[in-house]
Length: 94
Image (cartoon, rainbow, N blue to C red; front, side, top):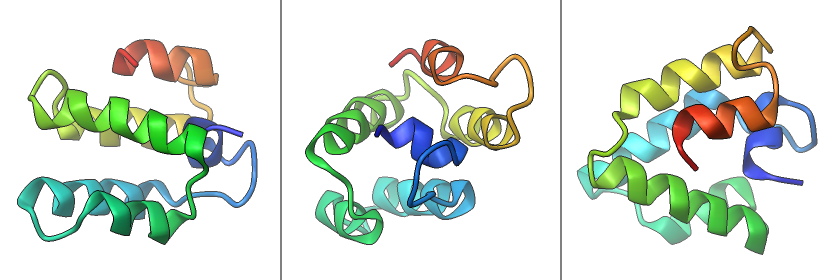
């Protein structure tokens, strides 16, 4: 299982893209901790690593949060060009 397959709904339990984007935005605002994100979505150790990698890209403004939202919404519906985990990760640079 990976964070991205859960966001895409390929593995369970699925993570709502809207909830995930919202909690990342709250994390960036400093109102939510990383541990709260982990707890909210019951992330495995591997998923926590993926979260950290994605967070580092968003938090340093190497990747706009709105891009993450757009890509994940399209991926959730498996709309090309983001219809596989590999393509999603490539676009997000993770």
